[in-house]
Every structure is written in C-alpha cells, then in structure tokens.
Amino acid sequence: FTALKLENGWVETPGHSVSDSATVFASVTQMAMDNATLNGLARSGRDVRLYSSLDEPRTAEKLARHPSFTVVSDQIKARAGETLLETAISLQKAGLHTPAQQAIHLALPVLESKNLAFSMVDLLTEAKSFAAEGTGFTELGGEINAQIKRGDLLYVDVAKGYGTGLLVSRASYEAEKSILRHILEGKEAVTP
Image 1: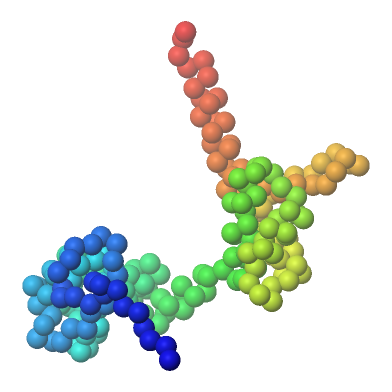
Image 2 (image 1 turned 135 degrees about the horizontal axis):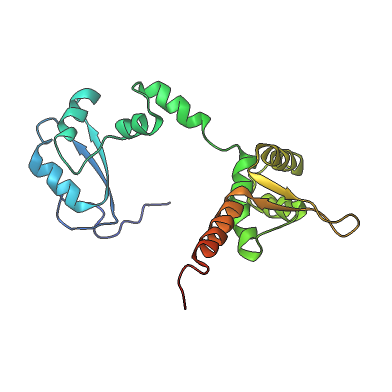
C-alpha cells in the first residue's frame, strides 16, 4: 500500500500565505475569475498556473487586464515573433538543440573553467558525460566538426610535431578579445 505524503501549506486559500518562490496551481470558474481572486493568487506565489472553464480568448482577455499575469501562449508568440500559436511552437521546437548539441553546450563551460583552450578529446570526453543515452562519440564528433565549420568553435593549430591542435569557443575568444581591447584603450590614456 502506498500513499501520498502531504505537508502543511500545500492546499490553502488564495492569498493565505505570501511567497515569492511558490508555484501555485488554481482552477478558477468564470464567476471566481475576478480581481480579488487574481490578486490573491498573485500574492500566493511567483509562478501561477491557472486553469479556467472559460475559452482561451476570454481567459486571455480577463488576464490581460491584470498587471500581474501574462498568458503563456502570448509569451510563446512574442518570443517567436509570430501571431499564430502553432507556427510559434514549430519555430521554438526547431530552435532546440539536438542531444549532441546539448551535450557539447553543457560540456564547454566545464572545460573552460579549467582552461580557455582544450583538446577535441577533452571535449568529446566531457560531452559524453552530459550526452543523452544513445548519443555516441560519432554524433558528438560530427557536431564538433560542424561547430568548427560554422565558426562556433575555433581550431588552433600547433607547430608540426609538437602536440595536438586545440579548440576555443567563439564566445570565449570574443570575450577575451574584448577584455584586451579595453585594456589597450586604457593604456597610457591617463598621465601618471
């Protein structure tokens, strides 16, 4: 026999407790969707998930009048720059990383925390630790090569016969270049 374990404060009236980190789930009827209820829900937590018996346009219209609420579908449309929800969702899905891209994206900060430049083997090894099950070294290596071709990763060759080439992420390279530019602009700018 198993049962759910509930703690105090899980179910309470809107606005009963004030929190800036709680997630609030509320099911609201048409009659209860007034300013007093919405204000109570807004005080109850930062992330409010509202389920309403009203259709989507009428719910969005009521929530648009309240400054504390934004409709998720409106956020998706605004982020994608589209007016149709289906098109906006398709654009957002197309922008997601593949499992290999995600693994490399997560591995880069770990490697860069140790050293700005790293070998392809180090990147492959670190990316494999973040890779989804079923993502192999072949996919990861292919993605690394694709990022080198796109310019997201920069290949730094070494002198012939002295080690292996290194990789540097474009973002880190640009950040370092910007720091050096600021230093050079400030050098000898003020007389001692």
